[in-house]
Image (cartoon, rainbow over all chains, first blue to last red; front, side, top):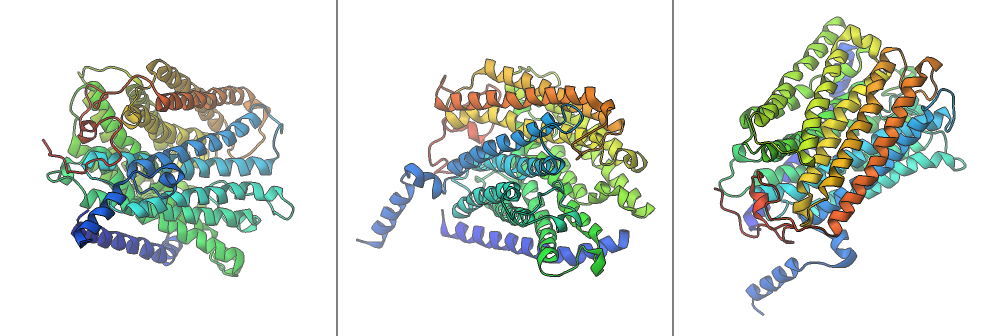
Length: 39
Length: 532
């Protein structure tokens, strides 16, 4: 695999991983608010 | 030795085919990892199936025969979690591993070592899950998990240490799924053959692209929820304990924000498989490619916004339940569009009915039936009656077995000649299909009547008035369960030998994967293919 492609792959993978971590951290607070609003 | 020579030698070693156990443990080859996923999923299918058989044996007649109520609930919890996380998701991931690089003309997955890690997390997670089932039987093991797969507090806060095993197991399964999803997205976005634009990508790849994004967006929410559960259990927090100012209903929201899209995570890859099988056996191009892509995106988008239709009975405001009801019913539009496109593909086609096509037709009929009972459940006043009854059990099995499991069976029969280089025994395949489909319908159709007559789910005993339908359902379940031994036999027989399969195993099949030999070489697409 060409080094450029390898770098692009890694960069996108880290970005997607960061999205997953941010969603996990935000979910608790965000969904607490939603639950309060509609329950 | 010059730098170039060293690089060449390393390249040579890299491309050597590893042998023995190292080939599997250290594998970075997408086909080997795909095979590992499929073997793992098949094993878990039998484990989850065995627990379902005990459940149906218990429900064969009223009264308690085989298991006590706690073990019964432990079994239904394990059955659901093993089937969802152990069987269906890994099977779909196995097919993604096998087929995506072949379909898009890539040499392998984008991140092969991460691919190895995502698979090898699974056996560890499965061990923890099995331990969560057996630990209560040892001295000091605490009580059994009796919450069902939804793990609702406050019950899940009172269960013994087996709940901790389950929470850690789900964490590992979640990490595995997120890593696999990242790999699939990167592969699909960065590794397509030159000329394969997104709108030329096979539908199976589209289905997996959307599924992978769904996984990245919802699995972390489950991880957050169960971590909060763990903190409530051991570290004195009160996220879900009312006595400490917490709210148990919050967990339901967190769980179903993951749980409802999870249904589409299970369904979409199987829908994608049908988009390849139906044109191949109708000998016609797929009808409405762009409509199907749009519908998949629509299902994912709406599917993330309707989670609380699982919670109508918690006492939400009228505005909230109305929103969730309308949103849920709206999903039938993109789902209906996909079914319409598949039927239109068959219209006036030169159809033949080999096993993959038999499954495809059966799926369209039975999944649509499950979708219709879903619309009944989406209607709030009606759901107040159906909630937590066997009607719900019948509904989600009609959606998930045809929609996900049968789609995967169709995929197994469709791609088995490509994977193994041998044709499966068509006669035995058809026998499996009929036993499977008849067994399935005899099992789950009567459960609609049981639910409507008032039989609750998740309870080991029932009123004598429900005896006949339960007996029929259990007989169907045994036929359905046993039919899988035939599937195992067919797969093993095909792997071991048989009539040689052509590179293009099916007349009407199209796509890059059929240009490669059957089975494909250890390193496929070492040179990017030319797109016609």
